[in-house]
Amino acid sequence: MLKKTITYKDYNGTERTEDHYFNLSEAEVMEMEMSTAGGLAEMIRGIVAAQDAPAIIKIFKDLILKAYGEKSPDGRRFVKSDELSKAFSETEAYSVLFMELATDADAAAKFVNGIVPNSRQGVPAPALAPVAN
Image (cartoon, rainbow, N blue to C red; front, top):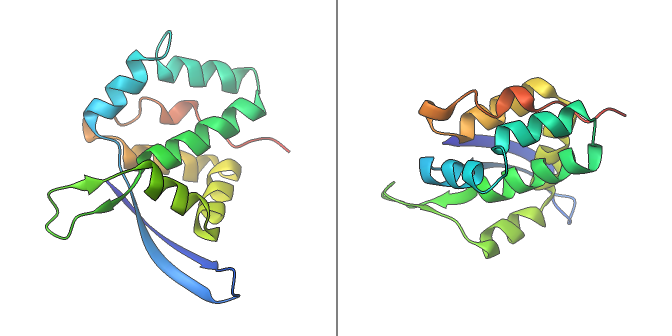
């Protein structure tokens, strides 16, 4: 699980600093791998090698929103839903995080390694690279 502290200005101009949580379970990573021909990591490597910026952007967005959730107070659950992901995507916190990942390969690799289970770390992360301008 990755806790990311993000500072941003909301739509009222108020600066906010908030903690946001991201995680992919072993089952979610396996599902992503198995539902992609050749595996997710290979697909990402191919997209990066082809310098397919629109596809790279879509992968970043999908990873962020699929991993986003809220930790239950007792720590037993990591609650995810389309509604929670959509609400997060409508904040400037999402925009700040998205731009960081899209422009900084090290930040992208750290993010991916932070959201995948320890047993899967390093699988998709090396394939991610910032989008070239």
